[in-house]
Image (tube, rainbow, N blue to C red; front, side):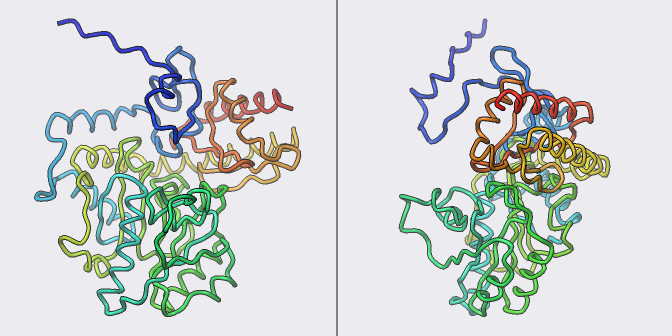
Length: 405
């Protein structure tokens, strides 16, 4: 039987069938390979966005496609009445490579963060401190779109109109040790932060700030919870960003690059803390399904390899130096910051709030980049991007900025 032709769709179709919570660009990407994408018109793009730091090993990596195909021909889904081999192998890998002793799998960063916040409160409740509920989070953070995580995020624009919001949160300025010291108390349940704020402008925590978070949690019996949804899985040049700082969290969440584009996330913690999540306290229908776990296992083996992490650090230096050179050439950047292949370039006063203008100009040059607010360009290319591809992308960025000057 001859296959029926695909139904023709376009960007305009979005406006007639989709909820308008997104405003996608006119192009529709159709296929990808490595660091490159092609749209439905056949135009080629160099991808410095990776689906917001998701496609960490590039598009259609042969090893990942192979893992997906092999598992797709075995079993896709099992209920929580069963465990499965891919999930168990993946959990073993996470435990062997990190502080973690126990792993919970979910499907998105928001779900992993939701689980982490619930676990933190449940842990203290199980120890007889049901009143120990304050969660300290930070301004300009982003932790997801559920009501619990959007409340934790500390950005009013994402919570407006969804009240009443969950209680028990205190938001402090990021990297402000004095404010943190003044707030943490014996009633604090957890300190919850991104080691490097992504949506908040690609702002790394200072080593002193992370150390203060750890010390104050220890002093007051609170848990240190790190959101590594965006910074995990090799993105910063270490497997996880906390490993740059020499500070160990009690709970860590990760997603995005974990599945290389397949929806999967994880919450990592210690055996003692995990003990309070007894059967029935929390769950996920699809979390840790064998198809997703098999894909994530293949991704893990790639991103955890010394060769990949070495490439991240080498290409990070190349990207940073290139951004600084472009910034000096056009007077366009006031700061370049970040870790590994998650870098942000803050626009100078002369280009204030023109990040999207530059993004659009980049698309015209065949380069895909990101923004982090109105005045920060964000770059998150594949961890496997080559030196030549990085040089090409920087040349395209140069041309894009020249076109709007």
